[in-house]
Image (cartoon, rainbow, N blue to C red; front, side):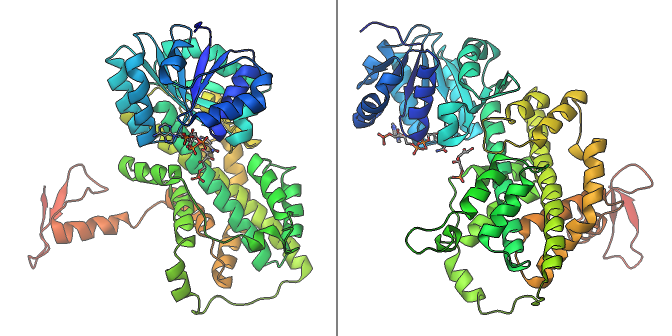
Length: 479
Ligand SMILES: NC(=O)C1=CN([C@@H]2O[C@H](COP(=O)(O)OP(=O)(O)OC[C@H]3O[C@@H](n4cnc5c(N)ncnc54)[C@H](OP(=O)(O)O)[C@@H]3O)[C@@H](O)[C@H]2O)C=CC1
Ligand SMILES: O=C(CO)[C@H](O)[C@H](O)COP(=O)(O)O
């Protein structure tokens, strides 16, 4: 077989098939392979005419079809499947060849794989790809980890197939080894928070303001013309205005209310606990999915009393809608800020030199969390690369200041009416926690010292101290 493909894609389910087509549509010759060969044949039958593909049914034929140094992209399930594919292909590769994992791998797996393959002279590139089926085909956002040299080789290809915003490609080198997959994981954590906040806004508009799904779809369409403009708001309006063909009822009313997850939100929260990053809104969004699936618990809790029923007049409903918009915007800024904080914490922990302006730049297009306000976030990061928080940027601080009364009103209304709003409440609590002059953490330190002699620091002098709580005079000593 002639060695002619610029890149090979193995794993031709939704993402791999569409990425392969995207490469081919941009003029690249693409070798295609899948464990189950019928998928490869299906791609050739349906889309073979779209460009130059080299179908391969065996691993050897696939590797032999690639130009050297080889670029072999894996698009399979994360975890054991990715290891199985690497184990199959790595022995067939040569020094200087490149394996690109475009799946949603855990960043720690990517670090392990990169180290092991580097020792064998193979470049391993962990590339987070976002945008789902449509993005993979028409332009995803690509978050690339691995060596700068490897990215330099891949950049022309990735930057041509990625989404573009104002002429700029949504693909960038994030940092070494697992940095790309880490940023993709946090992207998904923010995605969970963004989706949950939107879902809570819908629930409040439905239960408190008593709008129908079709009316709420129109509200979201109106919001999508303003500062909340984003892909997720846009698709929410589409889902809410959809009518189930079988029953004639709103689609949202016939879908079981138990949310699924593949695991990237859970990984974000698990990793945040390890790093000590307080991503409370993302955590609540992840737990909200878990709670929705607890059917036995929900059956046990369902008969218990809820909040007060206060009917809303139309004019009050309109005022409430505007308050929900403010609460949603403020909470969304907090969710993104928590994600950035977590990436900053990881950069420190793993020695990654991450350009936040570049990260927010590539999130403006192609990916699921793409949103108009990312343009402003990107400018904020470009203007101040060491920006500690979005709320340290005057324009965002002003908006949050303006939103805080309605934000509190919405969270209070949710509590009074018994409508769950865990992500709204978590975002507001995070804001109040970080802006507080004094936190009750001082009391926690006292408790810890009381039962475990864990010591505490004082506000008025340096050092660690311990109070001898069992002694009648409770003397304090330097620890
Ligand atoms: N779907 C989405 O919206 C997005 C998905 N991703 C990530 O992209 C990757 C691909 O996703 P998607 O296209 O949805 O496909 P899936 O995650 O459903 O994976 C299916 C593919 O994995 C292959 N596979 C599974 N186990 C093995 C194995 N042991 N050895 C070899 N191949 C195996 C399957 O081959 P076979 O046909 O033989 O079963 C098939 O090609 C995943 O990591 C996913 O998390 C990233 C962004 C968005
Ligand atoms: O990576 C993605 C988008 O960016 C995927 O769509 C992801 O699988 C969605 O996650 P989940 O299934 O857990 O909701």
